[in-house]
Length: 330
Image (cartoon, rainbow, N blue to C red; front, side, top):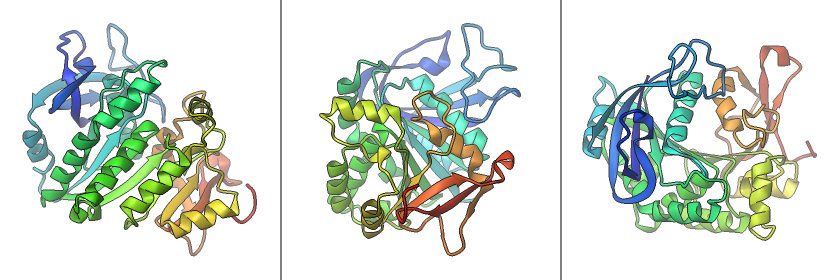
């Protein structure tokens, strides 16, 4: 498959590994590239089959080709199809290398069967467990770059709907970019975006303030949460016990009322198996499960409010149903 990357990481040449061509150093300008990624026939949904020193495309994900290009050429390439291209922009989270972000986007794109163009926005995470504070600074550094990318995509009328997926600390970065777009009066860009936050690592009070600055979105901002997310539990402890948005409990009626009043679709995805032990990457499995999801009568996945994505009695068939949350505890 073909994937694109736009990054404010410093370029790092690595002839032995074309996927690791960008470091954790902060660049002042954008770099862009087009990648050809092969997915092994043994691929399992939600997983990244990591290549070793000698990648084998039959059993691992492999970078088959890479072409560096200016951002303008990336936009032209994305928009070169015969019809207006759907675009998905993925913003990774904390402790993520360029290579991991690229392969995660490959996994999501493959498993969802998504059409259109997929773009990785890779900000200069240190990709280290002990780099949480440094990553927060790197995400802050990247606000203008992400804002500029979204505005550039939205201004090009050859490009169709734009979906933005922000994971973990990347969710905070996405919210800051949206807030900046609103504060600068760039409402036309905001109207082009559909935004999904997966396990966002955002202080609840900060999130409320961001929502007030951004205002309602159409369709509503979608937030995937799970109260048992252990990574966000650690983040809360690192932040003096302040609760994180991605670990909210939609069974609390107060949260349900607040979500609907704020124009947010809050979806509990705790029933989905996570590919990581901390329960922090359930969104990676959701890509494969989306076709089997059913909605309760009268509900739409784009409605504001609190919902629970739960496994039904047809679990063997992988069926999930989106039901109203916030009425009784799950």
